[in-house]
Image 1 (cartoon, rainbow, N blue to C red):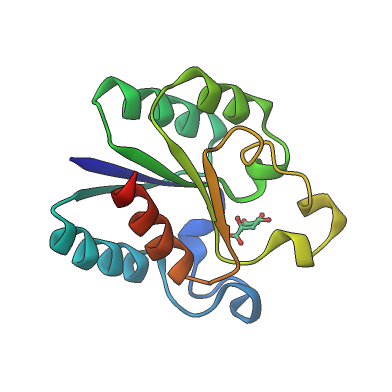
Image 2 (cartoon, protein in one colour):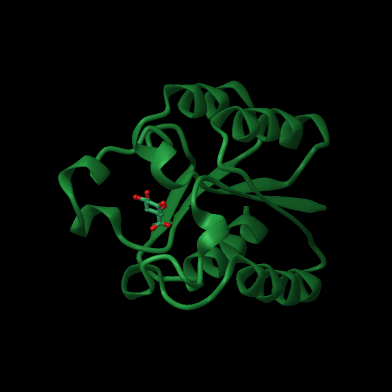
Length: 142
Ligand code: DQA
């Protein structure tokens, strides 16, 4: 079974992007960590990143079409703006787990609203790269 790990805008720059907030791990580092754990759990990871909102919408549809077990979604800033992602999550039966490295609720007010979180099954935030691993554990137990 496959778990999609979808990453939105600017997450390709992880490692060098505001490391005081997001840490020094790159998206490749996170992919490696997830793949190690997925192997132990008998799961496959399909990790993708795009800076384009529509790609994330298409990939959510694809997750359902291919029968993915779950989607871990860090939509980056689209979290706080995207009715399209909200609707896409509602449109599929595949469980979607919202993931954030930082805890948006401790940050600027514009990060306090999550269109993704209002549609997602669950949210994990604030653990840095470990947020992804905890979300994978959750997906495994669904
Ligand atoms: C983020 C939090 C968002 O507010 C921000 O726009 C990001 C990263 C996180 O993982 O902490 O791009 O999703």
